[in-house]
Length: 177
Image (cartoon, rainbow, N blue to C red; front, side, top):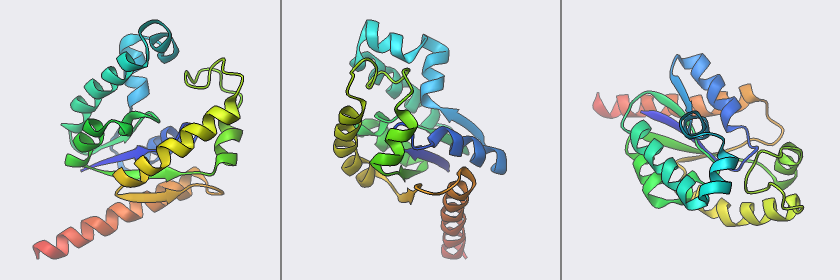
């Protein structure tokens, strides 16, 4: 069973994913890192090939990773918006929506010029707010669990996710017994 982390840019999916992998001995994959390792910088992919091409590359990575077991997968912010991706991830994983307030997210992403959906817009707050409003209902719909991250450390969020996984495994064990 894979642990899949979804949520907005800046919520901490990579940091938490790395921490969970360290604590559990699982392999960690960040879909954005896999894509950039294979195809170059994400901002260049968006600029030269467009968002649709990037989303196609995401689906290729999801097909590959969802077929494996025992991974921690940190997804790009828009990855689960495509139903095919969330369906593939659910077949062998539990999806955790890492939720944070607009204020927390804005503080974390404001200075990051590498985020293609915010790059050169001059309207970081407006664009982030619009994305948050559009994406939150989808995140909530695809998630098996919602973890609020405001005011919590990476360790605390990792603890909460692992507690959900432990409880689910214990429940599965009781059903088999």
